[in-house]
Image 1 (tube, rainbow, N blue to C red):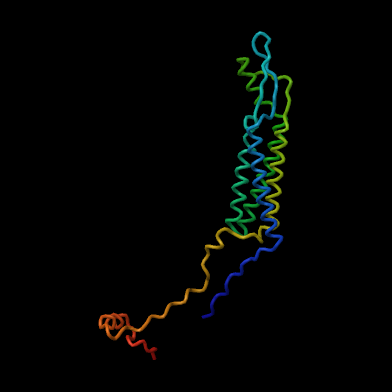
Image 2 (cartoon, helix red, strand yellow):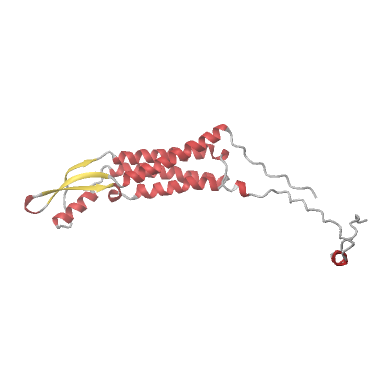
Length: 212
């Protein structure tokens, strides 16, 4: 019976090692920027309160849209999962990372013109179901989220392009295809009769002579 040929393993090339480091750095930095920007002020405005008094209002990125933060977490998880799978699974996870980055960019740009969070706060101040907000302004934090999304997107593109050359976390735990050689048993000690009987019970030659 012919033994099956061992499965060839991919040896990381210098380009593959560099792309791994670049993807990890881009993905981690991108996710960190998105999560950082989500907790900062994205938009400001003025709401009219009672007796003609105006009150300043502001909305954070998470109040404007929670989508960038959620996609950043998904992208970060996909970046880690890339190294846990191989083949088609790796390409699928890399594609998820690309889509997460693109989604962050789209959601952050949409949030630049979204005033619904400010209007909701203005309505609470005025005690109305709906209220207008004046002097609307936007900070630079949405653009920080956009930059983070672009970095996640680039990390995903690197995974799609060079992922075949990257190692997998499970590789070191895989067992070889060849069975481990069996250790030869020493012949039974003739001075110990109990060992002779045990060898005979196992169907072995207690003298250690090779079978015919």
